[in-house]
Image 1 (cartoon, rainbow, N blue to C red):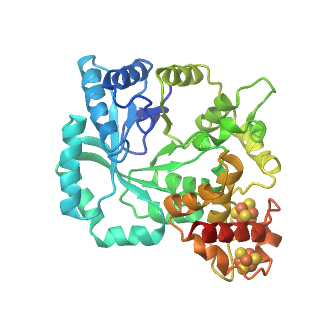
Image 2: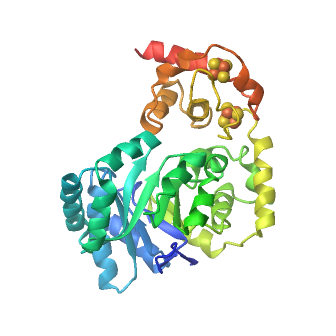
Length: 367
Ligand code: SF4
Ligand code: SF4
């Protein structure tokens, strides 16, 4: 196992982290505990869950798993999150979490899922930062962290708050161009960086041809290379993998044991091959993001990617992505006046206007 510093906390954490969001047998705690044990025996020390994973069942099985790790003197850090914003709600939540997790304190406690900066300002108004500081002073949490779906410079604005010790965000060979700017703030503030969705939510293994730019030779495994792509990134402290089956834990441990680092120059060469491979697929570069109608085009096009790449028929996948992931009203697509400015700027030559029209018709048929 490889261990890296988590920001300036003084803690070294395993580069491979255990994500508790995908357990395939959540109603069989014995299996879940066995998976955690196997990971810990392989050197994993970072275990991440959240109250929303399987309606708190993930935290409950984590409680059993962590107790077993303690019995066996296996070291670990536990991370979880809260979506609550007021002090009274957060206190009620953390009390229940400490019980479920069967610990006295949470190592890395996250303000959960900042989807846009307005949402962040609203949570700040509710006093969330003061509450987190109090929880830390009282020893209930050890480090103040945040998890985010923000993109490009927005995530930098969030991280420059100065209160955070670490950040959790989605980053992979699929979306690295949208999220790379986060690392400027991570370096500036010396934060721990935990990345999730290392396989782009399944998109990478489903489309090995699209991600062929990762592979040094045709025989290489696209999954192993997608993980290597993250492990090569020197600013990443932990790569979270959400394990479904016991065999997934074994596979990930084998991958990190066999990991052969590349130089930063070699990694840059891999990244430079991505755009050509992604022709027709939005990379989130945001060159189009100056729409006179204020349509957030990169988010619309990323949602369209889900239809192209997620192998789900129909257009609901686009609408779900817009509403649930990006929290955007899909009706906004209808505001397009077809000025063509965005298509001229698009590096991937995407027919943005056509895609917005399709989204508008999907909205109409869904209502
Ligand atoms: S074509 Fe439509 S989406 Fe593109 S910039 Fe013009 S108004 Fe905005
Ligand atoms: S310019 Fe094209 S590839 Fe870049 S974010 Fe806009 S739609 Fe996506």
